[in-house]
Image (cartoon, rainbow, N blue to C red; front, top):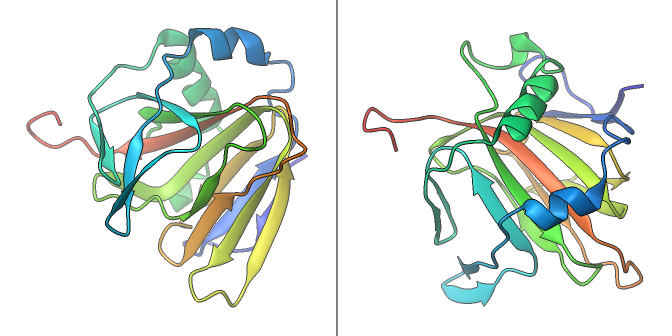
Length: 199
């Protein structure tokens, strides 16, 4: 049953959770076939190794000094994107919105993490990002940029999170949990606006 994590209405920011939406999925087959890489990112003028593994499928995309070339979604990921798309409220996204890309993050254990950030690159439509978690449960944090409000939700295996209009005034993070020993995969489906030159 769907529940609200961050309240909102219409074009206002909100976050909706479908617990166990993909509970039947297995972690190992996905983990073994994803073409993982560890990127170096530029944060406040300094370069760091990302404390996680990543992969990208979709039109060309850039963030924090990382440049992903265009790579078509494999059929199974495209089918998964269409299933997720069916849950999106069409009144909250622009006409023609589709989940045409996915950034996949692999967390080897609780040492791997992601700091507070926004997904607000100019080529990305921020009206909705869908996040599917497989594997170890981890705590997902959301806060307003002025830090006046903060929310936490434990994302377990198979949980699906839809973030509507959350990238302007809010940031999100996945903090370290040192006692977590198991792997976690996070699929973040998005809509990348393709320019006339195809990039």
